[in-house]
Length: 131
Length: 287
Length: 91
Image 1 (tube, chains in turn blue, green, yellow):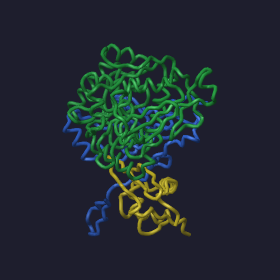
Image 2: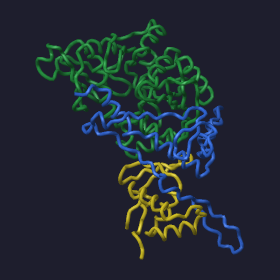
Image 3: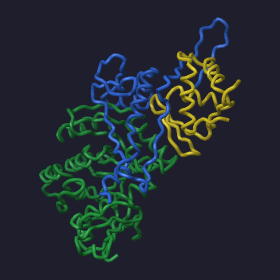
Image 4: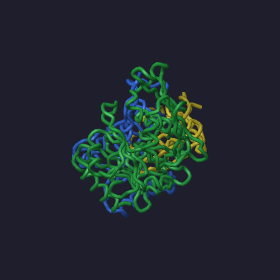
């Protein structure tokens, strides 16, 4: 996965680019455990409501959704419609535009998909009438 | 307990016990074509009980108990006993299921391949599943999809389809021959009426299917669709799973495999006709 | 004077799966799942064999990669995240 720096004198360096990222950015999104039902209280339990990017919305550097064409914003992952294209894109595993900045913005976007604690336990407890 | 019924939904066996006859009678009627648990042994128990002895008779209210509970849940009036039983079974699955990765998603099958629709309450996954069932798709379930860690196949959980508010009238007119439970008004979730899955769904309830498409539907917007990347699908599905963390590495392996092998799309739709059109188009293109 | 020495969790304790441009990590001892993006995999790789303080790590990364934004504060932020996630510890 990592490249060794060239040791030949005079050869152009073929080292891979790397960015450390802004101090306020985040490169780690940890999956939070489901809410322990005994500790649940309605006020601490948020139903996760991820908003899908509306068709035509772009993803800004902080992961928020902005109108298409907003300067500095990144297009959401490409949407090939044909079956083979989708399968190829998925199995290729390459996020379209593996440019560092678009990956970072996408990272922020998926971080924002996590609201409150994970899953249905919270949802289930909210569905039940509370005493 | 005085009254009880045992039944199997998909691969999961339940025993529901009750202090009152009526909810058990309703379950026996609506689930009459469902098999008994294997060897008569239930995987999970649900108890519908009165908090105090007199609550059996005076303004009777049903407490939901079982192997897994939410301790401070308030009781429901006896008229909603069927809903209490459903909530009880949901709770056992949400909190106790360990054999399969549990996804809060509806699932339907065509040509042996499964479509999964994941979303929060109100996204339309139950209604869309019911409509697709009416169009000949095999219903696997309207609320839960079970993913087998060994094979990656989807197993169904074809409980009674829970229709809310406007969906009730829609399905009554779409399926005039359908079997419906009693109308329960003004429940904590609005008006609710159950629809019994059709003969095809019940007959094949233990037949798994290979997942071929994952959809994240949202109701109430102009029709639109976009691809959902593996990482985004993964995070959304961890949000939609009650036992991803509890399954440890098996959960991780099952879900990473699912999102790498199965394409995912997000769809917005303003009405069910648009949704069904989007679903059919995407299925033809990707599945 | 050297700062705290950081060491990554051994790779054998982590299951790693690529999900597009992002990597999903399952850390077996904690049974926690983390989604990580660059430069995390590269930092974890660098801190596998030998513990390094932040300055040594920055130098190491600059030798191995073309680091466009070699800011110690940025690296410190990444190390803090990794420590909070339990993927890196002070040796």
